[in-house]
Image 1 (cartoon, helix red, strand yellow):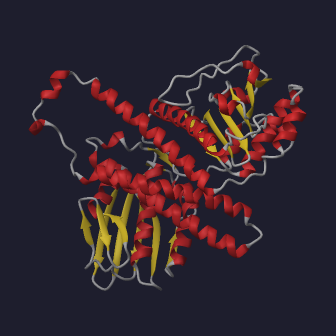
Image 2: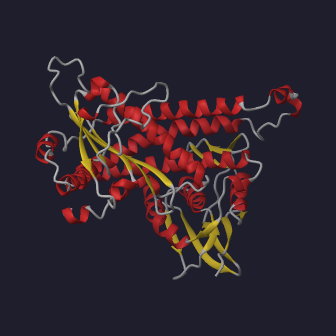
Image 3: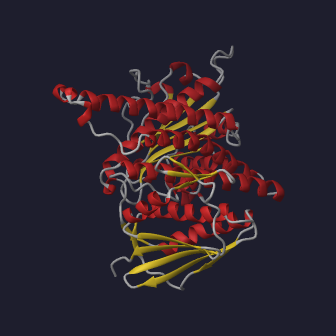
Length: 474
């Protein structure tokens, strides 16, 4: 990375290189909710990092003068624990030399004390510097390195990102180093020598897992507090309403399903993160990369499966689907270009022949791109997991008036004799151990997307799923 180019980049640009979880953007919340969510994640991450530092830094070490890490942050110091501050070199980037205080919340449960300006190195940024638009914290220690950033994305919405990836950490340090050089900070050489001890650290997977658990616990506490505040706002007279008049969720299993999908996605996301790190370090060992990529793909598929079940439960429990689904002009071509490679890998892994026939140019449709991507992936998985080995199916896409028609055609029927219904939402196939959405729920999802799904089964001639999606405005 050329130093002059670094001045034209910010940290969120660097993190985009590592942001594999952004393929399915969450379009189910308005701008205010997204901003609140990003702030909660930022606050929770700071608190989690401070706990992680307490866990990994030898505070009780006899050599009290030993510096065990460096913390870069903006626009204020973020680490407030005095014992930690004495063991960390703190560097603060901002646009002025004014006295600063640690105003960013690091713990939802305690009050905070100011951090003395004597305890940190001050770096003044130019008023036009791109970095002043971001809140960030880069931590480098002997045990782990981590970057967290809260920024505004291209859609003018708040966004939280983090990474433990060594390559991303190195690029982030280079970007910050350019600011040190251009500000002619006299501590640049000292910091560069200090950071050499930490910059190549690859974190143990247990540390990344622990950070994830800390972060989830912080967010859970915040959401619990928010719920209690909302309950306290309810007028006293409303608490005397008869239970017979109190609206209940359509199906009692939805809340349980949402909780279970959350618990399943969390460890899988950690495994996925670690696998990504290992793949980047194992490029010279093709066999190892092959196995790691298989693990990463399995994790991704399972995460997407759980996310779809969560969304389906959310849709079925909402009185109005508009609160969950946001229909916007969508490029189906972009979705297919992104997902077809993984569909083919999925089919090959199960020895299924997949043929996809697409026109040279596809018109835009109106849909929710995140949910559409997930539900199409779910249908592909249904075919690949339930067809016998060596079977084949075809995906055909054709224009149909003011709609776009997608057809999934299989040569053989699925064995539905042993399929069990799990409540109103799920189907369970004991022979394969697979979970899928029920036909009614799948149809409801396409209806919420402004489309339609029909399913036809012909004895000994296979199954045909036909999807109609509305075209966008020309």
